Amino acid sequence: DALVLGTRGCIDTLLTAVIGDSLTRKEHDSDKELRGQGLANMISGLFGALPGAGATMGTVTNIQVGARSPLSGVVRALVLALVVLVAGGLTEPIPMAVLAGIAVYVGFNILDWSFIQRAHKVSFSGMAIMYGVMLLTVFVDLIVAVGLGVFVSNIMIIERLSREQARQVKAISDADEDDVPLTDSERGLLDRANGRVLFFYLSGPMIFSVSKAISRQ
Image 1 (cartoon, rainbow, N blue to C red):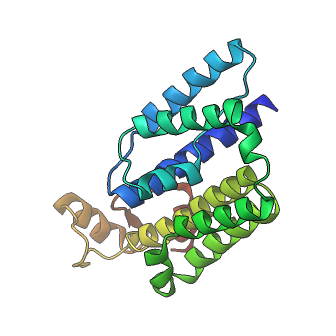
Image 2: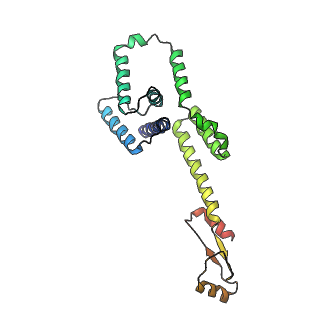
Image 3: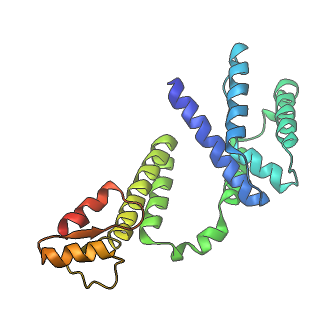
């Protein structure tokens, strides 16, 4: 349970940082974010407090009102703590429907509308992964969604690399091949072998999935 909770906190924080980058046009330091979160959670655990992670809605709201520095998150946390500890009675009558409406409004602002407008230019496989991760996040679990999304994306990348690398594999049995740079000794060997020797010309990095292309040739 602790591992799952920690993983989910890290994913939430990194996703929040990516969304913040898209809004501020800056680039975050993932290592710094995770180190800070881990240290803060270890200290909070010593006092019996609950662990925390990056809050997407709070981050987006801060950015929309002009906040840019890390201090804005500290101020937001202090104001929230002050409201809960001092003005809890004043906020209690607020209907849940109002809070839900605010959450929906902020959620719409989180969406990357510029990407949605050009989503039709993305490949079918990319769209399938995006919508699959989105549905799994809503109906199953964030960790499952991200894990499956990363796994399927890696499989697709391997398959794409395999196709590209397979094009670089050439089987040579004739010394007169012009599209492959053979040395004089190799050409002499092919002439003497008279078709009984097969050279494989490999170019660039090779992965295990190219073995099928080599065996076919």
